[in-house]
Structure formats: C-alpha cells, structure tokens
Image 1 (cartoon, rainbow, N blue to C red):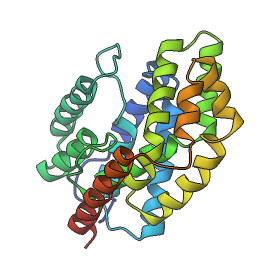
Image 2: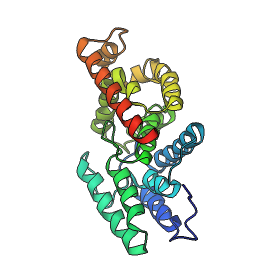
Image 3: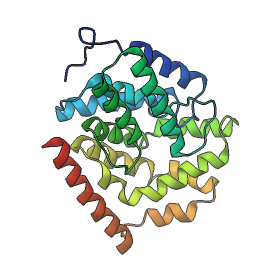
Length: 243
C-alpha cells in the first residue's frame, strides 16, 4: 500500500513526534521506552521487506510508535492501558482528518498487538511479531536490568517481566508468523534465555528453579498441547491475511 499520505490526507509526522516525546518524558518503564518502540519499528521494516508484504506503512508506523504509550500519566500492567491509548489516538486521528478506514486499521492494530491476541489486520501480524522479537533483545534486557540496579525501575516489575518471559519460552516460537522472525527468535533464544546472562537475572529474583524447568529439552503434554493449539491458530491467521 502507498505510505505517502501527502496527496491523499494528513501527514503522520506530528503524531509520531508526539509519541516519541511521550515515550522520552514518561515511558511505562525501561522495558517499554522510546528505544523499545524504535526497535519494534525497525523490526517492522525488516519483516515487511523480507516477507515482501503489502501493508499500509503509515498505519503500521503509527501503531509501532503508539502501542505502549502512556496517555493518562501513570502505568499499571493492564489492558486498560491499551484501551486508553486507542481511545486517545482515535480521537487525534479523527481530529486531524484521517479517513475512517485508516483510523480503524491503525487503532485495531494497536488494540490487538498483545502476545497471542487475535489479529484483525495484516499490520497486526507484523506488529505482534516485531514486538515479540524485541523481547529477544539482549540490549533491551540489559537496559532494564541497569535501570533496576540504579533504582530507576522496581524489582517487582522487572521480576514480573522475567517470570512471564520464562513461562512463555516453551511455546513462544510457535506464535511467530513469519519465517524471518522465527529464524531470528530461534537464534536469540539460545543466546539469551538459555545462557548465563538470563540465568543470573533469574537467580536474582529467586526464579532459578523456573529457569531450569523451562530450559529442559522435553515438553510436557500440557505445553505440547498449547504449542499445537498455537500452531493451528497461526495457520488460520496466516491463511486469512497472507493468502
């Protein structure tokens, strides 16, 4: 799709600038800061190019830079935050004069960007994979760990992210939609989640046993059943948006 809106509608540049300012001045935390959003956008560009996808790049860029923005001043780990940014950005897009189809595509892509949420646009498939892939970034985890050690991020919050990420490892690879993201995630999983770096973080938050359990080679029947379910869901969504 054509991403140059200068001939058919408003520019997205002011809204991207606003998102960057909000992410610089009041990020959710050091796992969801401006650097995270820039990395997600970079991943989006890589996916679109490698997979030769026909997407609305303006809509995708807005979704990439707004998906974890705080609009009400504070952050709690809740889907209400996603609803808040969707409501805010929808009003802004309508106010500026974007057409309804573009606004709906952008907002629904953000609304359903979370891991294992049901995608409703092709852009959503891209954003989901781009966002998950940044969870496999050693730089991102190192940045968050340094923030925790310097008192800029609470231990309870980082511990939550560490625990959740470990629990996802047995089945998260099955959730990636694109060949290129699967390949990169597989390479990074061994480096990050099965190495000394993440083990050290896990031990600091008394999660060593979970780390060891997750890194066993064999899958339990429950985990394998979940992987199979995710694979079926992925196949259905790929058929819907990529056929």
